[in-house]
Length: 290
Image (cartoon, rainbow, N blue to C red; front, top):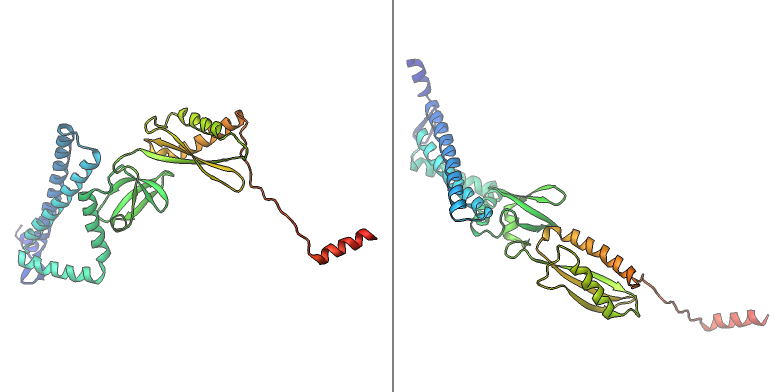
């Protein structure tokens, strides 16, 4: 027993004037993991209490849990360092070396960590939000220390650096109001009854279950195109995640309704006028004379 006690108290290294022993490292690990367990329990209790008593949204509860986790991790690091025998002066030296490391190559990691805290505190992007990343609409499923985890509608998980969401322009479809307006452009042949076209388009919009009654659907006559009269059917939906499906359904319905009411959808047409040069005209006349 005396040998074991001597072994665990034998210094392995020295940090400044402070010896680091196996016993200190073991105590630090135990304290660290105990604090993490306490953190998990506190997160669950606070989440359940706030969620039931105050009816807070899941995105807010997630932010609260993550912030509590980071606080407990910081406490665990400080307590573990004290178990090893490192005092605040020694910690200052260690953090000084850490600062040098950050200056040499950890800028991105630090920036992403700070950006993650901004996302949790300011909450421009929340769990469950639909955001546009590189032209693809994705759902936010997790905000971590370094990256935000999103999932596309193709069930592809993408890891987005937190700095990209803080520093760049981000389109959030659900941050405030989930209602989204969908554009459904369509062209009809010249000579079509434009009033009838408007009535048919509005009827199509009102017959789709995902189109909101308020705001009402709207039809705009955009322009006299090269080959068609161009209209835009504007509809509102409270399900932005289904906007591509909604646009596809409406296009199918428009095609069927136009066939039923004999409204033509034209294809591009061009009239070509050929003008002969004098030499070609003389050659043509000479051939006719023969």
